[in-house]
Length: 85
Image (cartoon, rainbow, N blue to C red; front, side, top):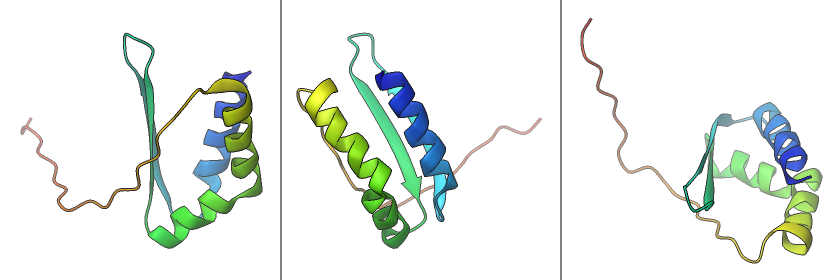
């Protein structure tokens, strides 16, 4: 059930204006992290207030999670390095 909800949230998030990227990771101990990137605080705020997203968060608290953490971050430096072919 949580997988279907996560898939729906991914589908919605990727359609939101300002969406940049989504990545998720699961550690060996089953701890999970999802990183969702938007181009601005305004577009992130629209995602935060999306009615289906709000309902999914409520379902997460009621049915799936004992606790979770949300961190909103601002990139202070970003660069890419690639070896020449």
